[in-house]
Length: 496
Image 1 (spheres, rainbow, N blue to C red):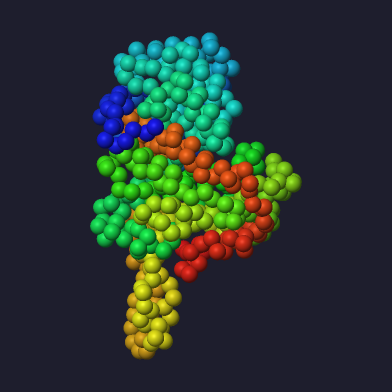
Image 2: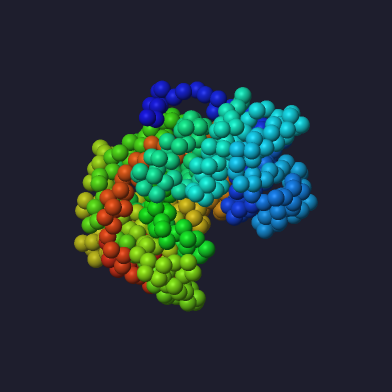
């Protein structure tokens, strides 16, 4: 059980602890490390947020030296616009260990190398292990770390776990049991990069720091909530994984559900990991069972995006020609709490849509009387708050104003805030925030074991009895059958 907020335990995971130590990346030569982890760590270094003594240790199966790993890192940083000269001081932090076939002897060698780096650099016994690994080798690495004592430290030993956190409730429970054999929950950081976005964190600020918003954040004022993640890309190089996962497992169970819990949770006792997780878990336990009548699954066929003709999902390389995997899903859900009783939550995500977008839309209830309609004015749309997480991060509130002149006419306009326009420096990448939180021991933006299991429990009925997959052309906004699963009156699904 998650401790209740008042019972939170002070531990060696305090964010006040020095961030000096070693950050160890398993799968250091992989795509995630190259595109996200090393650039994010560099940006934190560049901003002065990494302790000057922190060492970054890459671990992989390639037989290479520190120098060759450092050269790979230089190339990875060059791809995001960092010159070799600028990268130099950061690159000197990097070391490399070949884990070979992940035998007990290989893990003993890893432990000895970390001990050596620690001793030579005069580092405290603080270590964070980031497992950027496929699920097939996850358990072997966990056991390897545990068997040589790398799950314990005089300072801290932390474990960062990438999704997927299982493929259903049973596998998630089994995975949690395996992790807990070697690491305590306070050591574990299940990472969902959506939670690291500044706009997601600002959702809490927007709600809780503004009395006008929080007082309206309930069933009396809100008519519906829509959470949308659309992608213009297809399955790409992920066919081997995606064709066994689908949109529900890949996006809804984790990313969209985490956004839902932040929108729907009660005001936490404090801005702490335990307090926020406690409220999110209550939301998950309050979701009413989802039936197939409240879900639409789709799969993209050939079509046009912009001016580019693209092939259908079943024609993608690595996809089963008879695949029944969904690339689109729309759900209608209800959170059975005092605050949200009767308010529908629409969750929608799909590939090969007209553009990439992540957005939360809050539709407020209409005025009890359409006062201006009697004067011939078009007035059939409720006020809508849009929270855009990507791209063009910001907030906008859509409401009616009078058009100057006569006769009396109304126009719907946005009152908008855009991060880039206000903060010229832009927003940090989500991984910058999350990796720094791991080093500093702050679990607020990470997912608890019970959240993972409760989320899988919510979607178990759909996994066990999925509705049929219906086609939709690439470049469209999904199947026609999903039209009712959106806030249609404001055309938010298709608007900027």
